[in-house]
Image 1 (cartoon, one colour):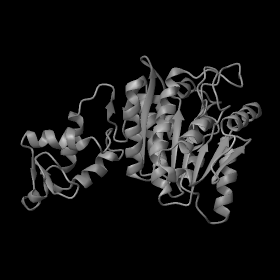
Image 2 (tube, helix red, strand yellow; image 1 turned 135 degrees about the horizontal axis):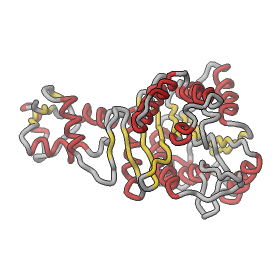
Image 3 (cartoon, helix red, strand yellow; image 1 turned 90 degrees about the horizontal axis):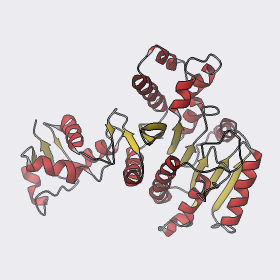
Image 4 (cartoon, one colour; image 1 turned 120 degrees about the vertical axis):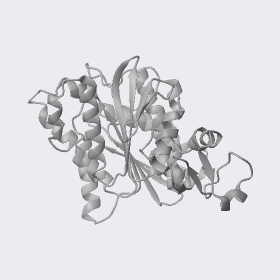
Length: 369
């Protein structure tokens, strides 16, 4: 939870642009839970800035969204899964309110669900948890960590790296650019930015006069730092209020399939809000006004002149190399390419096609230069 008001109320109103962030979070959990529950004995969901669990205008906080996503999931196996929900909140009154809301909304939980609370800052709670795991020379359970602070304190890159060094760990991080930009030249604020970015490379931005170039520099740096851990993919999208940028979300994962599911969640939610979506490769897309030519161009640039399967293209599209997800490329890229005479199917694989403009994952195709 973010947007803590200046008067530091226990419960405050959810701003409209934050609703989009919560919708993406819920959509992604709905996809993540059944996939991981098939293969792993325990799952861990961390909310690092849990808040009071509710808003004045009736919306629920992210901890309640996470619990509801698991309890009401249409795959019954999710409710039989061992899931630990770890809610971190440093404000004692908000933590007590959160406990009250959880108890009221969930008087009983599935037998294998556990809710644990930490009365601590995010970095302190994570240090305790990760140190406990590391001393035993073990890994965290497959983990989704929501890191949604107000400002930039208590979210050092060193802690995020420690989370991502664990197999199947993912982080969903809010970064408030306007807050960072306001204090770029403040000596008192510099140590916080050095912790946030995991080094002092951010200081080079002080020499950049253009506002958009400054933001691009810092976001590219943040994505690069996320991927210095075990993370192989970093997806980035922005939320705006009207034309004003509010904050950005970075999602880091060790799996292209995780990036793919996150992008699918963004695309699904986007028509109900203002989003600008950027991939790890620097592409920008207004997902409320879609033009698939950039998808066609990306696929052509990567694969033209070689025999390739749709399965290989799916991995490329689903990764952070593009702003698209893997359910989009067959209809919106391969079909137009074939219609234009720019795509051919390997002669030996023609019998595998049931009809024209269909693309089984194991057929070989070539995009012509």
